[in-house]
Image 1 (cartoon, helix red, strand yellow):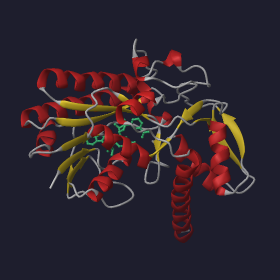
Image 2 (cartoon, rainbow, N blue to C red):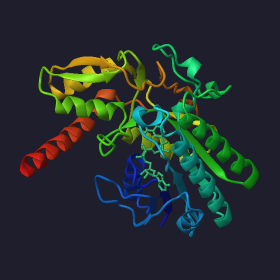
Image 3 (tube, helix red, strand yellow):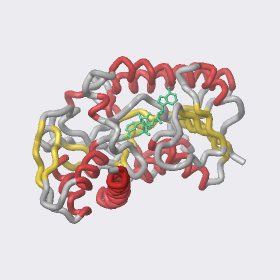
Image 4 (tube, helix red, strand yellow):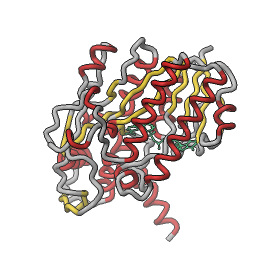
Length: 328
Ligand code: NAD
């Protein structure tokens, strides 16, 4: 039986990855500082521990693994990573996890590892136009990310590369672009735009008003969780040593995303633009390299993922309302 280790298995992408690997009949160990928030983990073994502690990392890698996925990070949406308030934690915690995991893997001779980097590593100055043609992988250099989160990701990409060169690791690195779907953060301050906007639309009455940070003309592309997992697994099992974007190239403005969600919810929604943390002005994924290297690229329409995500968040909102009503 094949064995996989998922670091960050209590998080959004990690918990979905565990389910996917279980469907493929892997024996899966998850590690995280917390259990998944919305469903029981499906991992065969789950270590609840802090990966900033080297001993936890050594315990996690105490047997042979065919695949190791390192997804653990101190992260969140714009309200968490772009305010500046969490910069020291974000850099220290995530760098420490990556340093520890790689060293534990080296000592245990478990050397096939996937690392989830981010579109946030791309330079700010090539993302000022909302009509972004797409960020291609070589655009990463000369480096100038707009957040400390991005700088840590870039440092860690290079750290994984160095372990590949100097210690014989087989390393696969993906730059994720805005992954979304059910069972992700939606109301705890770490939620990203699709979940936050689904929540606002679910909470408002038909004809009501929701708040959007900035003028809403900033653009992004959003990738549904299933395609993120498909791309990650394909990359992991490929011979590709290049760092690859894993993202959608269906770019939309935030105003358009609201309209899409409102359409799915069958509500009329007005937008009030307010100041807030924004990140870059325009971002899109260039998918030529992933197509060339993996003979595959994400291609599901955004609306399909929005339907599933809105359905799940509307359910969460209804459950909370019901609880509030019965407590009153
Ligand atoms: P998430 O926050 O849901 O998951 C990260 C997990 O890491 C959390 O469960 C958290 O508890 C765990 N973690 C943090 N510190 C830890 C510690 N010290 N010890 C053990 N576990 C710890 O985030 P996600 O959306 O699932 O993202 C997974 C990975 O993908 C992260 O590395 C993230 O930076 C990267 N990424 C995500 C996106 C996205 O849109 N979701 C985009 C780009 C990159």
